Image 1 (cartoon, rainbow, N blue to C red):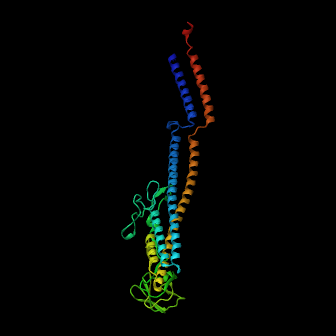
Image 2: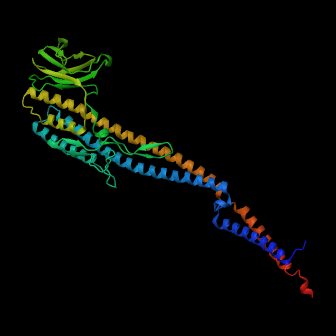
Image 3: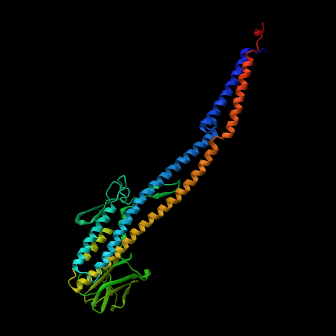
Length: 398
């Protein structure tokens, strides 16, 4: 078979082109620091790199979500901290107003200051973030959560929603609380029942402590304690059926249907006290009732007894509101701890993914430089061989 010069030349050129291609590819790898610069370099490894990149991008988004969540929760925690400060000051003022040495003028001044703290609470309940989103309006973040309605009562305009952000593949964290959860739905009394003083009482009987002693015996109903005489009483339910009757002594508690209540002072015949199932009330109406109780007249011993009894009951409701807001603030702290934990886990996972990605995609410089040296040597040898092959012709010797 005859091998022409053209055939040899084509073979040499193909070998040279292949050698140059390998040198160029290695030089490109060295310049980028990557073993895989296109899917054709290693299709299997390229697919794995794409998967690892997607996982890292997802982790970056989770970490960004965690940062945003921390900022939002920080704003809410600050607002609730200030709200607790207002409520604690109101409690101090209420104790001052319930002191027997406080005059009517003193109580008016105290009521005026409580109104200022109530307005401060309303402003905190309408707190917004840096983008103008309301913290306590649920999903309706553009709506002002609390506004003053007819008669001065506060109306909630938000919903019950709670926004969440994803901070891992399977974990979400709430970044707000609705105003209904924080400032409303606060139980009255002890959470089971609430006691009250009859508005027409003429004696000096005041309500003391009350508690649920036997939950199994408790029957939810409205009960009225009626003093038949200053030393005898009877208890009737909402159907006016007699529940219990007995002799009264200020040193003893009245017990019936699994609860007990204490009445101090000297009730008069015909005086009444009530026990009703506890409802839920918002903090603003609680403060309105407290202000009304403090501003009630106290010109006579009976009026003073009723006023102090009402202030005492409103104080119990205020304590419930304060405890409720403190619990809400504590829940925020639990979420921040969850963020701390998840951010640490995400960081560890990202480090593992980056290590794996580096092993798959990054270039081994020592191996690459050694290979490049060999390829350059091979290319130089191929070029010299091609040059010498060009001189293998009989025409040069004719």
